[in-house]
Amino acid sequence: MTQNETMTAAEDLFEGQWFLHVPAPGMQGWPLQVAARELEGVSVRIITTDEVREVVSYARDRQVPLLRAYS
Image: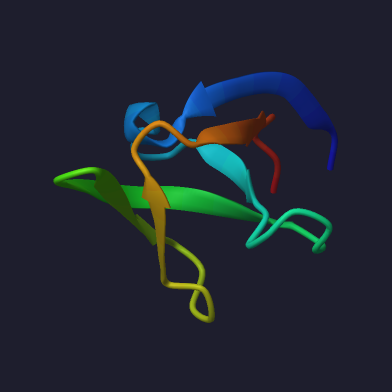
């Protein structure tokens, strides 16, 4: 897995896109793929393809590292 240096606002993630989910600064992150997203006021709810981390929620303007697609 190679991390792409590109960052995007959480509200701009789209279906099929890979991103690095880091729960809090200093914690280890893991790759997730967007299945869908729902904008909810000042937050965005991201439904992922991961069976364990099925849903994550961020502030809409939180910067999220994008990853290159991999399998």
